Image 1: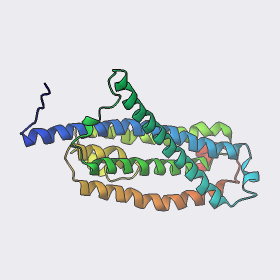
Image 2 (image 1 turned 45 degrees about the vertical axis):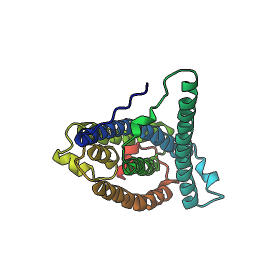
Image 3 (image 1 turned 90 degrees about the vertical axis):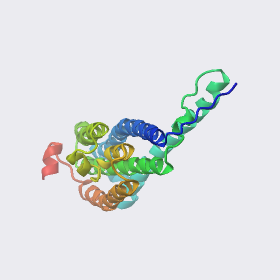
Image 4 (image 1 turned 60 degrees about the vertical axis):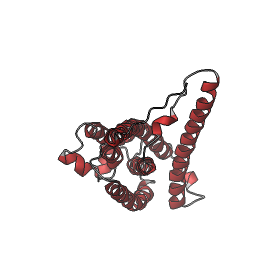
Length: 249
């Protein structure tokens, strides 16, 4: 006999939905940290190695700097999209195959029942915009690299910045109303880890979340042109000085 339990307590149901959203936000913070760390390393290594090996002269002899930079950024973004699609496909296959062999499904889709589509879309867009922002920042730092030995320093300096919103995002899941957390939830490079958590705890509305995302998108556009300008300006500059010296001069 199949027995179905239905809750008639609206407040209890709403609380359960917020708890699910908090779990999703915590997963996004951790997954976003891992993804950003990986793609910052990829971007910095690609740009730094080409310049350090003096391969960029032959590449740019047949194409413009702006087109090459835009193509490289799109290539990294397409790689990210392809990777996410592969993961989604593998999870989908696992969810179909595992019940057939009398095993528990990898992801219980019932968990997502009652969670707003608005929240899922907003959280996904936050992560996409954040990845692009950090890729552009990594491209800017890597443009100053003249030696292969400085590639790891360039990528680690950008990756270390991710630790700040990562830690704040974990704190926000416990104390979302702290003053500095409110401020950081609207700051690009940090909002992707903090604003979804604040929405999940019910301390801010979806409207405020979309405002925070809009601020990040507005930052994304000029940062792309700034990154392209810095890349074009420094791509043929070679120096025996350290990365820190090149950044300051």
